[in-house]
Amino acid sequence: MEEKIEKKKSKTSVGGQAVIEGVMMRGKDGIATAVRLEDGSIEVQKEKSESITKKHKFLGLPIIRGFVSLIESLVIGIKSLNYSASLFETEEEESKFDKWFENTFKEKGNDILIGFSLVVGLAFSVFLFFIVPTFLANLIKNYITDSNIGLNIAEGIIRVCIFLLYVVLIGKMKDIQRVYMYHGAEHKSIACYEAGEELTPENAKKYTRFHPRCGTNFLFLVMIISIIIFSLTGWESICQRIISRILLLPIVSGITYEVIRFLGKSDGKIAKIIAKPGLMLQKLTTREPDLDMLEVAITSLKAAEGIED
Image 1 (cartoon, rainbow, N blue to C red):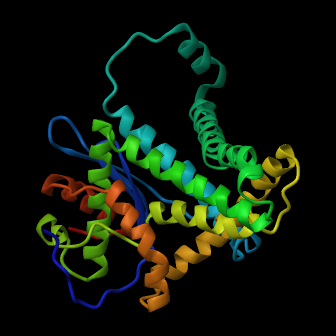
Image 2 (cartoon, rainbow, N blue to C red; image 1 turned 90 degrees about the vertical axis):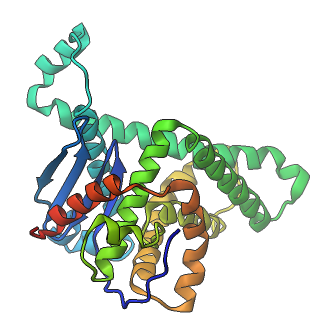
Image 3 (tube, helix red, strand yellow; image 1 turned 120 degrees about the vertical axis):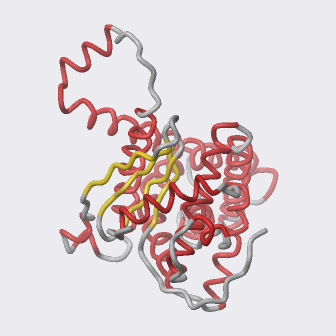
């Protein structure tokens, strides 16, 4: 059972992501991915990283930095997932396509695969969570209301329902359940770190597996904020409707990013109210980790923050 810790917490910007049998952390000293191998050892990959939003002032402006940071996070997440997956690959004979791809693109091959994965992932997300709800709302608009606000609310409800159904269904997969456990380990280790307590699996286990800066919160708030932003557009043809959704996504994600930053820095009542639905949703996207998983998460966090053992 989780214990409530009453220590004064310090705010940090460290964040991460669960990967296959491990955790990626992004901290002040770079990006670190720690993975538990089949022999029980922990493999750590670390690299220096500086956000492009810090290199170019324009990209660091409010709203703009949110969309840029989202793309950066997706790229880093894909790289970390690919790295963790590569540690469990079995020896297989290369196919003709693999040989052609490697010979053709050489050292650029990995970047091309990451770019392709990013495009496919974004396209799937936009289709499932934005195009499908718009299409379904358009089908039933004659049966509910002609009000622009009413139609946007109906579309938003459909979008949230699809999102929740998606989360529940993938959570039933055995491999995903382990990823959710590592997700919980990521949050617990960060909570322990923010509380200023010694980073050990036993200490981290006492802390909550829910965190306001979680990506789950981000996705849920995107669903809610999109209802408000999309209400500013008319309900024209279905094609115009879909195009407007795609064009407004950078603004929606940028505003959501600023809200998440606010939630991560504030302990006020308003922040707690806004964060509450996303924290409850994390009951679906996180699981209680074991001590071995917490050890992996702590190893990644220490490497990302430059903490010496």
